Length: 136
Image (tube, rainbow, N blue to C red; front, side, top):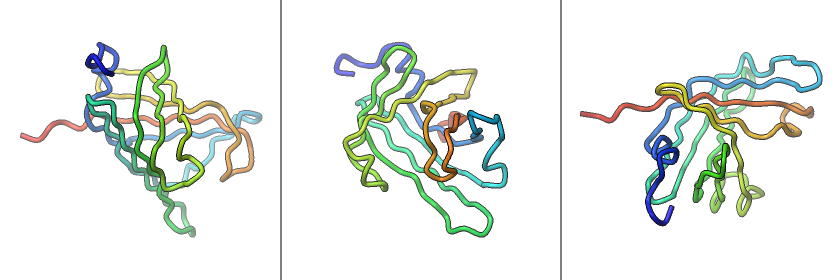
């Protein structure tokens, strides 16, 4: 984003609150994590930085936090996060690629279908975010 955000990048800018997570096994279509409470925020800045933090709270298990910071850019119909710091050390130096879709004040991010280390199966996920209104 050296010359400033284009129209699509402009839509990302600001802070978003997590309002829904959908996770399903690809092989069976079975919905997973229906009893997990997930809250979080993601922010995109015009200087090409982003940060995300998500809390996962499953009954009977300790809270799990996912968080990282990265440079970000749009490539076609994907947003790419070049991770430079993360709670999960193996993510540092990786590219976290997410499909995206905007609908009104909502942003849906979808990681690629992949093996899920929590469930031990291949899953499809999507995270729905709602734009946080600026404070007055």
